[in-house]
Length: 115
Image 1 (cartoon, helix red, strand yellow):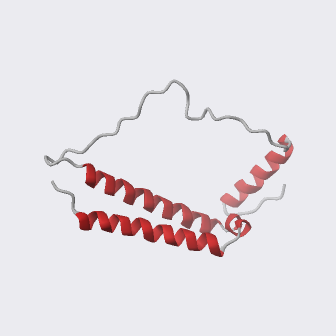
Image 2 (cartoon, rainbow, N blue to C red; image 1 turned 180 degrees about the vertical axis):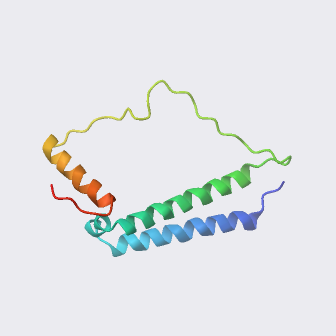
């Protein structure tokens, strides 16, 4: 199977369109307003998912072999966990961190909590 250029161009157009939408939204909104409005965040996440899907579809189409088989990407075995991340030095107390997390979790559920 040959690469269908029009199909790849459609995927690229989709990626560029979602990218422009995200850029416009970020330029029009302050960080605070983005964090206060859960619907904006959900829209941003959805747009990113659409971009990822279009990228995956484009790559899958490009990498498809003539006999119809597709290239399989197999993750490399690693010794450490993906959750092993370096720590940072922060000037915030555990109490302050807990307060912030509780406040944000309340917003994520669609309601605000008093801390």
